[in-house]
Image 1 (tube, rainbow, N blue to C red):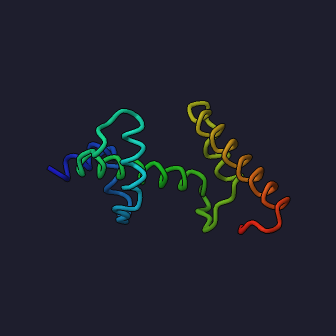
Image 2: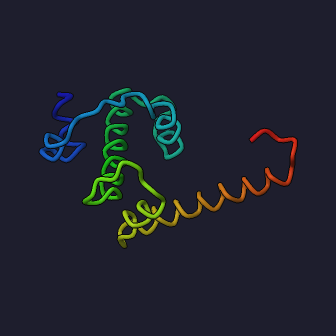
Length: 119
């Protein structure tokens, strides 16, 4: 049953071509909070959270592979990620990435103005 759910969640045969790396539990706490925020039960089932985590990890992996391009770079730059998210279907994701980068810089500038705050 787990294999069926995992195959359905990850798109089936595409997963078998990739090297499987397990990162179970990395996003569990955050996913539970996000799922609750979007209307799920306060304590969603572990199977549900695990499937969501598999989908999330696959998405992140796909974006990174796309950003790496045909040369399969070892380190990704922001420009690589911008290029990977430049498709019209990913416009909201790109806008959110840009917003978060702007907020990060804004926070850095604000911290620089107050010298006794830890960075």
